[in-house]
Image (tube, rainbow, N blue to C red):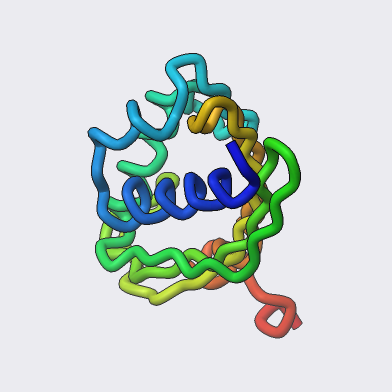
Length: 143
């Protein structure tokens, strides 16, 4: 697999799993022994855990979108920065629907082996998200 092949896999993951909500693509794009290193409480660190997490995001943000801001790849790693956005029309992380439009940054790294994603590490700007949803006050509001 070339670096470009790995970038293409990343783009397919965004398109098929995040944007098109295609559950059949999980088996094609993520290895059976896939490991999720992000550590989301209550979500198993497996391919099924990612399905669960994405299902929750899609249920909470009915118009969910992912914008790809930057992609860098070397060897078997693809590092990317995205902006996630949507309107919170469903419950999310115990927060009732707010109807607010939000956008937050997400930084991810995947490792690719034999054309499939085998590992994922991620970090999302949860503080900004919670402030936009009104759960945590912004510095301006706290003054």
